[in-house]
Image (tube, rainbow over all chains, first blue to last red; front, side, top):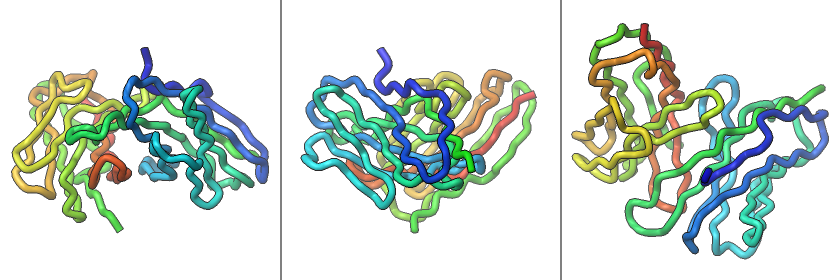
Length: 117
Length: 112
C-alpha cells in the first residue's frame, strides 16, 4: 500500500482563490510527522510546513495551513489567496517513528498546481 | 540560511561509466540523503547517512553506492551507469526527526 497518496495529479485554480491540495497517509506508528514541499519549475525543493502527529493545533505558516485530520489520516495543504508564483509541483511527505534512524521521508507523487490569471 | 550544494545541475554520461555526484552542506547536519525524482513517481530514497562513514540503504539502492568521508560531504556513485538511471537526483540534509530536510538544486543526469 502507498504510504503517501496524492490523488490530484494536476489542478488549475483562478488567482486569488483558495486552494486545497489533498494528502492521505498510511502508518501504524503513533509518532510521525508530515511535511509539505513546493518545487517550482526551476527544480529546487522548498519546505513549506510541518505537522507532528501529537500537535493539537493545525500548523500555519503565512498563507499556508495544514488541515490535519488524524482519524481520517489526511493532511491537506491549504493555500489562501493564491498567487501566480504558487504555480509549482507540491509534494506531501511523511516521517515515521521518533527513534534514531527515522529521519528519512516517504514522498507522495505530487500535485502540479497551475494558477490562472 | 542552510545551503546544500550539488556539484552539477546537468550531467551527460555514457553507459558503463562510473559516475560521481557530489553534495556539500554547510549547516553541520548529521543526516544526509540522496533521492531520485522521476515523473509520476515522486521522490524515492536511494541512500542516507547518519554520520561520517555510516550509510543505510533506502528504497532503491540497487546500482548505487555512497561515500561519506567528511560530515559535510555525501557522494552518490553510479558504479556502472545504465540508461534507466537517467533521472533527476536530489541531495538533502537534515538536523533531526522533526526538522525539515533542506535540498540542493538537483542534478539532471542523462545516461546515453
